[in-house]
Length: 59
Image (tube, rainbow, N blue to C red):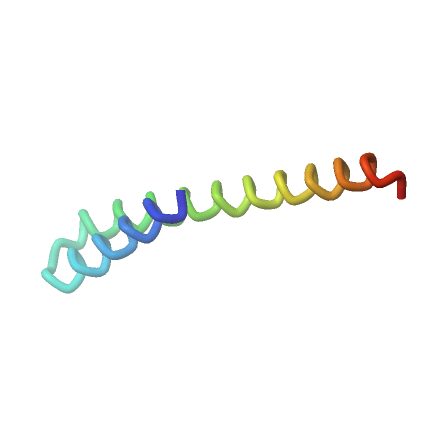
């Protein structure tokens, strides 16, 4: 998902440099949404890994 966020960010930068403001805004918005979804997913899986590790090790 971070790969797609990076792709949309690059598209936004190129579109903005070429003067396509609307396309750049939409691509930047999509990149932000994908980035925050990836961060939330990472935090959820990190928490699950910590709790599962504690349960397996008995700490």
